[in-house]
Structure formats: structure tokens, C-alpha cells
Amino acid sequence: MKFATQKLLTVLALTACVGAGLGACAPIIVGGAVMGSLMATDRRTAGTQIEDEGIELRAGSGVSDNLGERVHVNVTSYNRQVLLTGEVPSAQDKQLVEQVVSKVENVRAIVNELGILGNSTLPQRTSDALVTGKVKASMLDAKDLFANSFKVVTERGTTYLMGRVTQREANRATDLARSTGGVQKVVRVLEIISEDELANMLPKPAPADTKK
Image 1 (cartoon, rainbow, N blue to C red):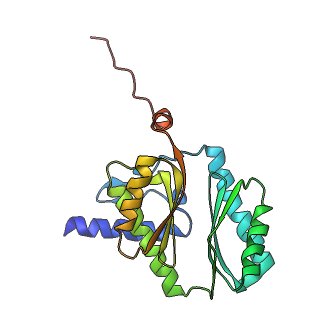
Image 2: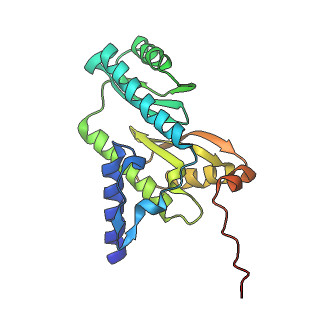
Image 3: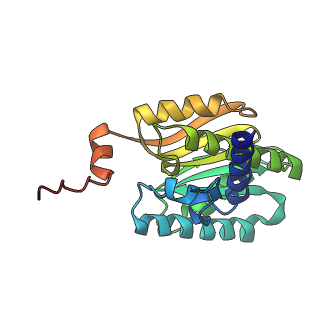
């Protein structure tokens, strides 16, 4: 019962962080463990992380200025690759959103997953946020994944995975997401790196003390 309660608290805390981005959350303390420390590994440089945050802010502002409230658009940037999710009323609006975002400084690629339909409801968005939190919680439970190497976005039951990961990590994360309740489909927007590249990113162990 204690473990189940702790895991539920983790999911709820993760869900609360979805809107702001998990990287921006304060450390989450569950059962005496600092969850923030488990999520500290990010494979982007500090400069790129700042660029991604700026891209999301500028792109979101541009979409709002040009299309107003008739659209519901989420902008997620990872390593300057932008994922567009949400809903727009027409194909013309879908193209316009992409044009607006393409003009934002530092954007190198756009994946346009906007649906042409009415805006999702608050209960639908709440459900998607909970699913995202559950996927992230599953990644935290996994011993063979760095949870903060991924960005997770869920829109209308489709879960998108972003990040710089190895093929093994991509497959593992995909399996975890597919087995999560509420996930109807998984779309990978991932940059695949080699195991050697990953090894070079990881902190090197401190040299052994040879003094007797």
C-alpha cells in the first residue's frame, strides 16, 4: 500500500509539471527520495536547453498573435526540433501555424502533428496530462532508462516521445509507453545516437585512490 501511494504521488507530481516542462520543476521528494536528482541527466547542452525554452515561448506567442483562440496549439522543442500538437479548424490554419513557427529563430526542423478538428476539451487535456505523467513514472521505475533524456507529450491519446537516445533506449521507452493505460498510439520524434556516443556523454567514474 505504501509503495502504491508513493507511486501515485509521483504520477500526480509529474502531471502537475507537464504544463511547465519537467525540466523546470523543483525536485520532487517521494518517500524520502529526491526525484529531481534522478531526472538530472539531460543530453542537450545548457545553451540548447535555454534555446529550446526560448523557441517554445516565441513560437507560442507567434501562434497566439496570428491565430488567436480559434486554435489549440502546443509547441514542444527538443534540440531545436519543434513538435506541433493540438487542433486547428482547417488545413490552411495548420499550414499557417507551421509557417509562423518556421520563422522563429534557431528552429531547425518542424514535425507538424496538428489535427484538423475542434479544440479538445478540458477533461480531454487533463486525461492527456495524466497519461503523460504515467508514462514518465514508468520511465522513472525502469532501471535501464534515464527518464530526463526524454520529453513526453500526449495529445488525444497519442503519446509522442522526443529525445537523443540510443536505439535500445528508443525501443524500451516505446514498449513502456505502449503498455501504459490510456496510450492509444506512440509516435517517436527521436534522434538516435550510438552506444559509443552515449558512453561519451555519461559522467566518467572518479579514479580509484591507490594510496594505502
